[in-house]
Image 1 (cartoon, rainbow, N blue to C red):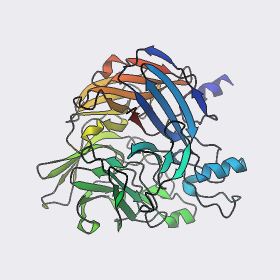
Image 2: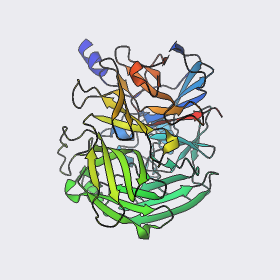
Image 3: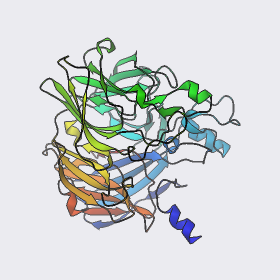
Length: 465
């Protein structure tokens, strides 16, 4: 029994079965008084286990750490999507993976949304996001679910978990894949102005159906990566993997001017790879430069025949893509900037789409297993050179680091990194607060929870103002 219990505590993926409020949390060190606001995090936390369901499709659970005047409190709530409510009423799972209904589910049940990937604040709305459905509006203080939000009927269908907010105009730019239905090659894209009004919503066809988790926005361009983690309805209908790795299809990236239309898209080609997350991108002398976390082969998904991908190639590394806009070539360049395994890249969001000098991402311990869990943070400069690195004690893991500026007019990178850390030996979590430009010094403060926050995906800081 002891061996089984120890094995269970080697990772932090299993869901927690409760919602909780902790109004006064213990703090080790001192919280910066300028940190007044809430860190919201989102991730999969299935209400019920479901046979064959991918971890990606667990019900969303929000975790909110509220910091104010050196104090800290915590609240977590499931996102009460139509799927969550139906399963809660039934007392059992009704859906399997990727919206697939179980055979004994009620016939009139159609919505398998989970709202489990990201949470963003824009134009006064707090929105829980995943890539298959519309945003779900959340009440900021209570975390109560208000329901789908469709921008006065101007937006429909899938909506990315990774919209980009232009730091200059306040505009939110988004896209959605499977825009013509499940496992189709259509993409939608659009924009929401700073007041929350939908100003654009259009669709276009891509070279093939692909899982498009993130996209690229610069000052004047949108870039849509179509990478060979492919979707196939034929496979899905025959019981094979709906999404699978098909490197022979190659990599495409469509480049479109933000003030243009889909008819103007120029398609660039590259070596087969997969990218879940973009760090940042900018325009530079007739080129577009994008820093991404690139896998040689897609992880977590098999080949079409069910064979797993190669674990040696299924790890992400900091990579730079370069696009020549002169029209001399339709190939984009791909160059790794580091050999360190990492994911969940972030920047000072005030430089989103503009040339940046600071970036951070969660990394694996280079002295540990090559494909081990994310157990540290790396700070890099604008050329991808490491400026600092912090590694957790053996066995502990870390979430995506979120940057918070010291003040609205502080220099780029002047502020803190907030990251949730799982303490393996104690099987509980801390919120760690780092000085963003001195991460090697370790956390300046730890907010200690009595329970764990399961490994999740993304979060964002919303200041008290």
